[in-house]
Image 1 (cartoon, rainbow, N blue to C red):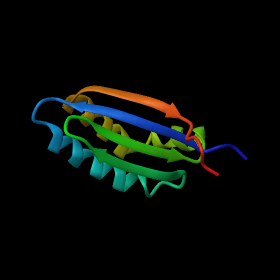
Image 2: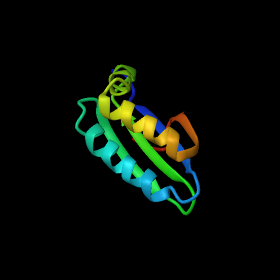
Image 3: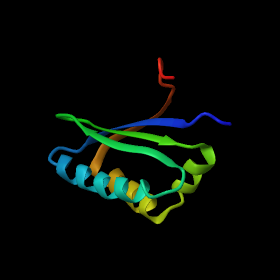
Image 4: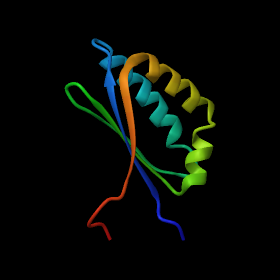
Length: 96
């Protein structure tokens, strides 16, 4: 059995675009949570940054997600709305 794949995406919206980024991520999250390989897809909003926490069953599930129309459209919108996006694969510590 493979370990789940954990991602943290950090987004820095352009000035004044935070509400648009949050709205885009809400739509993306709703659709992504319906995918078979999605274990978690949560959005956290700070004063200047937005964080996306994703957990996928494996790399194949993530690869399939990246081909979904809602992902392609969502990423295109986020690229226009954000000054920067950073994706990082992480391993949670201290979980059983």
